[in-house]
Image (tube, one colour):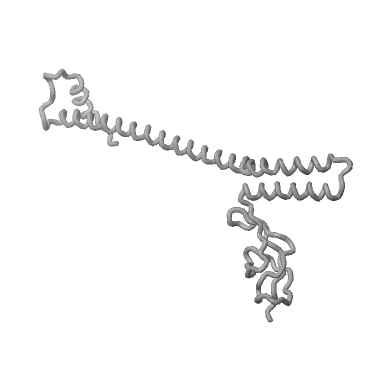
Length: 184
């Protein structure tokens, strides 16, 4: 901002000290100084308001970023809570089976079947899907071929499953270990 020299400052000071009857004539240097001072005050007020709005918007943006980071941290920390709750029944069944003193093989077998059903229900509740592809075309995204065997099926068809695979939300957690029909 240009500085006023001392000769211009004296008339400006006089203009401020005048009463309304002493208002400078339009177009005079004093009137121009008064108008410029009023413009400067308005511009300074607008700049202060803009700076305040900027600081508030910046603080709000920082608060939003911090809340989002907290939400992500909580999602990581508690994301498996529902899945863990659904597995508690399975753990209870296994502990109950171990607490039995004189169990027969048949009662253990029945208990294991019940526990497997509970586990399957927990998987279904949490959208964990088994990959058991017998008879399907081999898919390298979902299956891992362990062997190629001569078979009556079409080539590259899954003949047997050595270990089921699992998916959650269309994402493969573990591919199924399979043997595939060899080309004829």
